[in-house]
Image (tube, rainbow, N blue to C red; front, side, top):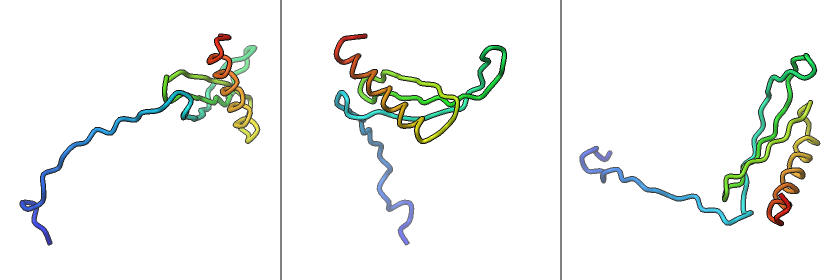
Length: 88
């Protein structure tokens, strides 16, 4: 067994995360309590962030379903296409 004295000293490394525009995005969702028309309810919120520019897109849904995930992605990508084309 190697003793601690003979091991090389620990070194630090910095690995930058570099993304090309449109290369990647982060996706997550949350459950939020909101009041709509006086009724407190739980909604599901899809969160997106572009890795290059850090621009966000958020969409809320009444239920968490597979269709919600697909729809949220479609809406986010359509939003960013319009933004890239200069329509926003």
